[in-house]
Image (cartoon, rainbow, N blue to C red; front, side, top):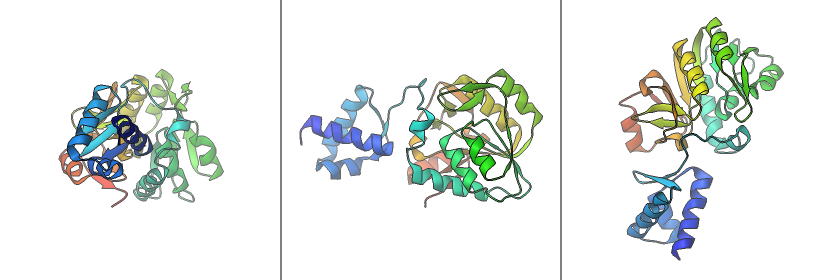
Length: 250
């Protein structure tokens, strides 16, 4: 297989999965470990991916973010499993916060028929919450078209009217050094305030968010429990030194 063909294969795998193991690339391309490592180094130099232990992840610009439509079709099975596990932590009578996002949206289905109160800044969450007859409140504030989130100064003031038993928050990046991050400072500020108003905070994110770091820090790793689809053994050992990890797919 030619260099260009292997590079295209690697990028296709990354676009499909978000992350890829060295062994998977070797098997798919019928190439040696040294050859694949050179390919990954070349692609990293071009800014197309980031090498991590045992493989690579798709490169993301620190200040860019996918739209809600783009997010909603990525890793759907994993997000549903994460949502199912997240919903199991909710007790009847709880007041919870559901952050805007495609993974938090999946949680709503698993809350049907429950005696809970939901507060959200997710515009796409509203119709689902209403259709399931869940007691819910939507924050006021500036509407962000790309992520369908309510943010800004009014939202920060509005959120102070509530206190939460549990908060379920999305993150674009989960990094040992930088903690939880997102590209938008206004979203980061709201997520941080929600964390401070909650008895327990859960980050719901698939494994493609691991090792990424974006522009705006939300809060530190130890401030939340991570609910994730699956971690490599090495990553799980590293992250569990900082916080609690709940795996949805084991």
